[in-house]
Amino acid sequence: MNWYLTVLKKYAVFEGRSRRKEYWFFVLISTIVGSCFIMIDRQMGNYDPETQVGFLHSLYSLLVLLPTVALSVRRLHDTGRSGWWLLLLFLPIIG
Image 1 (tube, rainbow, N blue to C red):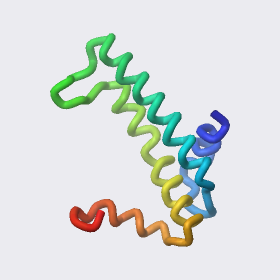
Image 2: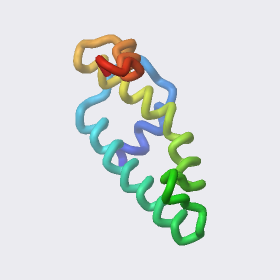
Image 3: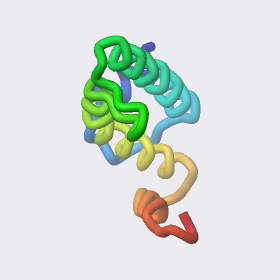
Image 4: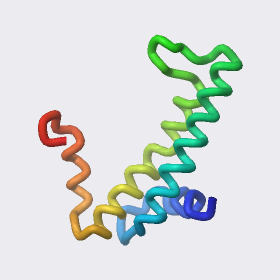
């Protein structure tokens, strides 16, 4: 849980490096929390199975969007690449 909180504390820090352990623990805990929000949305009736969108899960996804991008940029720095490589995800063939 410490790795998850560390990422949230450095939510807009795009400089520096992030270790592999920090990245994967954040992804693991974020996936678990997101899954819990999906289950809560289903119980409350806020989940649409056709679009697979729920209110709490959507809100959580928006809240961790910037920390996730910052963590990914720092992880790219740790592998010796520029953070601009993250933009390749927006190209359909290469990404």
